Length: 573
Ligand code: ADP
Ligand code: MG
Figure (cartoon, helix red, strand yellow):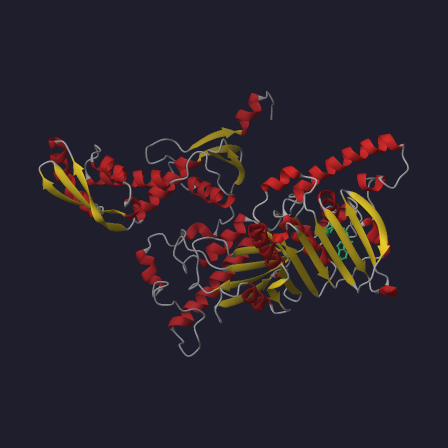
């Protein structure tokens, strides 16, 4: 292990004492700042320690948490361990045994590679590392407190490594304020253990919280690991596994049958070279694979494991390595979608033709429509247009949110600023048009007192409102009773009165008025934070529109070309 001089190292050199102290302080501050980016909260520590134990080739790993990880985190493994020399260096910044030269970064398959984790943890907490390679029964302990390393101590134990972290963020009182309750932090840590355990089914994992065994995952097959990790979610026989290998990559998908579904994408999880990543277009690839087998708005359970030659990817663009760039993304995308379509398609045929072989999937009564053609009729846009398959990778990149209102996207030679409220309004409006919301009878009807002329007008519009799910009864010449309304409106008397006294006449205008009011009410507002996946969906939708205007007619998008921008800074092409 080697690296540039560092604050921690300098403690051991014999510089002039005064300047040494100043340097040390500055460097430790800088290091704490940098550490803050990698180590956000207890779960970040759990992630890094597990990565290290996995990289060390462990067969079994135990995690012990106290106070949800806020009081103490300990990870014990039976991996390769560290020699005395490596142990003395591992808490120093930029020390890693995993890459020697920067070019190695393109070849690495290990989870860690920056040599930042242990030193960052040491900079913001108290750490003890006990390790042995199993040779000559040599066991040592390294420790750091307040960013200062203490000398190695001879210790006892067996082959492997144990890392214990206490006094978290003691040097960063500001950070402490942002941490949540122990229970919440503990739940995050538990999810992290599962996230790390899924791609490594051959490694056994145990998680103890306050000394109680909370998770026990013995070595298993990929599929058993998944059902073991989420024991309550997958009944026996509800998962299926498919794989495909290409020249530069292979994919394995373990998915729930379409009869199991959710309203969110929480359980579409993508792992690349055993690391969980957030890559919208791969979530989309899975969703497309299931489209036609699940109604729109419902999402499958699907775990996608991609193994790809490290030459084709770059993990190094995000400090916590959640993002990755692929060179062969379109090909992977296509493989995933078609693998799922093919398998689910075969399952569908079996379902109708050969009843002696058990169908790959069958819908449970009440959880899903009886067959696909039913589904198709009832849900007008249950699947993407046929063109979806040819062009499934988003053609734009999402840059983020500005003023908590504009979603910014870059596409070809332009920047697009998309009004999130207007975009979402339009999206909902189009949905209501395609599939009007359910209606609900009111237990207590709403009483309406109107002017005589308003009342007469309403009389004329009454039948049309009926067809739109609004039940009206005239009690007297100026008094009305509203008996049923679209479900989203059951508790919103004012909106109903506004609608009923609005100027719109004629079926088309009245419907438009209703849907745009409903859409406006449900749409995200200015000031709302939008997660990346929702942003991608909205932008994708806006780009699919011929006339991107909101239901009230306002434009949704503002465009700036590269030309415009270059001209602003008097730059020529
Ligand atoms: P990285 O994982 O990026 O190399 P870390 O700061 O996480 O950096 O760890 C520094 C080094 O300490 C690793 O490269 C490895 O050599 C050693 N190390 C850390 N944890 C373990 C472990 N559990 N078993 C064996 N070696 C370890
Ligand atoms: Mg590491």
